[in-house]
View 1 (cartoon, rainbow, N blue to C red):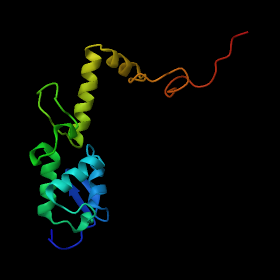
View 2 (view 1 turned 120 degrees about the horizontal axis):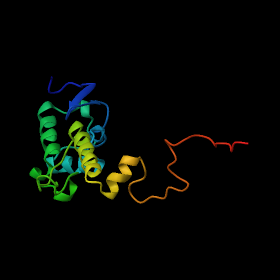
View 3 (view 1 turned 45 degrees about the vertical axis):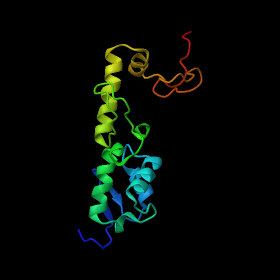
Length: 150
């Protein structure tokens, strides 16, 4: 791609993003990146966060991608990653895109297998985080009212 030209679609971390978005907003289109992380990464790399993504050169996009996959390597705190103290490895990891979706599904399946409280709630399709269920969360159950037979 050209270093100075405008691009309508830019691929960052396996995600196609429109080039007319400011960098701090455009990075949030990647699953696993919120606005706080996007701004922290851009400030740590010294890149203007209000610059349109379509004008960013390929070299800077590669630096941003590398920093998003490992935010601790550029000096960001450990609590900013989305998988601190990973149960399998014990290290602070940051997952993006399909890796994050797959890992979350594996975590839920592990909870179901070990029959933890959260696993049981997941398997039954009920609320998991302690919410009330008497009058809320009724999606997926039988519809309507059944009449008593006469």
